Each structure stands twice: as C-alpha cells, then as structure tokens.
Amino acid sequence: FGDDVDLQFTATVTGSDGSGTLAWEQSNGDMDGDFNPVNIGVGSHEAYAIFTEAGCTFRDTVEVIINGLPSSAFTLPDGPICVGEEVSADAGALLGGASYAWDIPGGDATVTNGPDDASRTISWSTPGRKFVHLTVTDDNGCVGATVTDSIDVEAPVPPVALSCDNVGFDQVGFAWSH
Image (cartoon, rainbow, N blue to C red; front, side):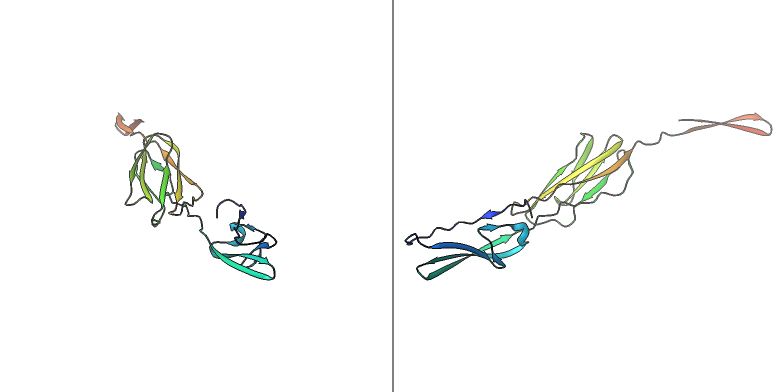
C-alpha cells in the first residue's frame, strides 16, 4: 500500500436523456465514488457503476488490482568489522522485474555487485558508523519504503613491539610500544 488516497471513479453515460443517476459500489458495499486502496487491501477487487434511468438499471464492472508494496528489507552482519573487511548486504531472493537502489553514502566505500541486484559486497576504508540504504521498486512501479541499516567499522589495532631487557641475573624487564 502506498499513499492513503481516495481514488475517484467516473463514468461516461451515452444515450441518456440526463434524468438518470449514477452510483458506485464495491464488492463490500457503497463507496460514494471513493475507492481507498488502504481500506480495501491488496488483491483483485470489483467496483460497479450502476446507472438508473426511467426505471431501467444498467451495471458495469471495473476490476481494480491493488498491488502490495515491495519490501526493501536487507541484512548486514552484526559488527563491528575492521577497515577493509568485506561484508555482504543481502535483500534475499531477487524479485523478478524489480529494481534495487542501493545508497552507500560517505565516499569511502568500495562496493561490488553480488550475484544479483539484491546483494552487494561492501568494504570501507575509514573507521566509524557506516550506513547502507535500500529502496526497491517492483515491476508495477510500486516503491517500497527505504530501509536503512548500519555497521560499525573499526580501525585496525596497531602492532605491538615487545622487547626484553636483561636487568639482572634473576630479573627480566619488558617494554612495549605501538
């Protein structure tokens, strides 16, 4: 479901003398010309145009298909990770005909395509909290809500230099630095 909006139906009646009335109904009752997809739900629904004039009733059916929004959910592994370490961002099974808009801000990421558009392999060259955003648009043009996940990237621990000094016959001294 996208925006919560009422759709207005109109009908053109030909051959009328102008004295008739037009009413709209849907499979679950009167709709007064308003059809709200949020209230109706995903699936195939029927709307009926009912025109009455001079004691005669004419009815026509319109099929309305309401598509659900695609999911933009994806997973990143739990962090933290190290600078330069690769992780996979994975949105699961590829939706046929869908487009995947990955957004990885900051300019310090190296991004390579996964086996399909629903996944990416990412590494970062600087430490910090890193964000990944995904928006999926299905083949009907329905746009899922953007999903954001984050992972902490840590700088590598510098190597430790350890040295031993012979302080005395029965003593050893240690010193380290990084």
